[in-house]
Image (cartoon, rainbow, N blue to C red; front, side, top):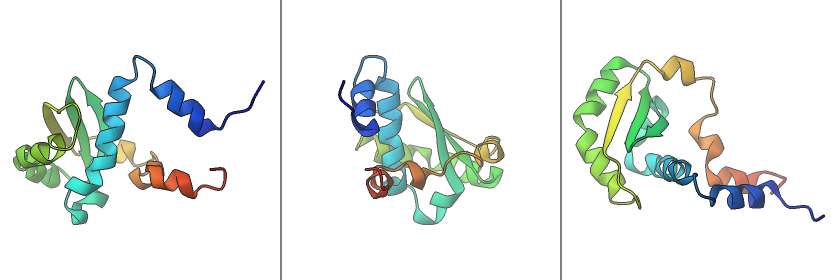
Length: 119
């Protein structure tokens, strides 16, 4: 029995059927810092993708409203770089506190994996 790195195992698993939505969400997570205003990056967090609708938690209801008004331009920028285009983006402050205990976006970026000692 040969040993494989976790990275290789995850790469094989995520290429299997049924993981399309996960791959699409992962692609959105990688693009989010590139399309959002840098001053808003710390105040927004994509938290789900379902049926082509991206849900984003915001640090305040006012920011959610502001970004809702900009959602078509954000969607256009995202869809220009995605293999499968999104249908819509929803912004909500309701999930911000609940998701604040989750791992921050920077911690799950591919570059951080390369910096890990086990890589």
